[in-house]
Image (cartoon, rainbow, N blue to C red; front, top):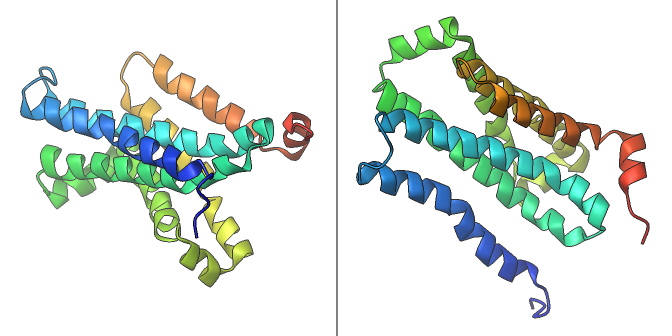
Length: 202
């Protein structure tokens, strides 16, 4: 029987719909003509931005647990990771359907000739096995050690996602560089000496 004093289900009940607000906003704005002069680009890029943000939030969970000594925060990691995959999937489908109309020849040409598309596809490919194996059943089937090794793919996936964003922008690179800095900090906080230093003693 669930512990009535456990706040996690109640917090999740708030976080889950809140995490859906960006996509609801983008689709409502698109349907009402409020996404600017290029709504398709705004829709695709907006979901890509939120995919990267949720990916970084997922990576922030472990450092936050070490800083706060609140183990309950780890129970949000899978949900945030799946939201990152959800937004990345909508981002990709928007490109395939709304931008390219499933013109596979043009899509393959984009993948080969446009580096930011190549990198973005690689990042998404790394996220797919993480989403598929995110359940406890898959964790048990793979075994804890093998599952952990597989889920370290989140690090190159995040790095490729940041690089995808950097290569995509044509002039102002400040935003992707900010994400790159945040990612570097989150990865640095995982190094054993840094992790030991930031872990608060109970």
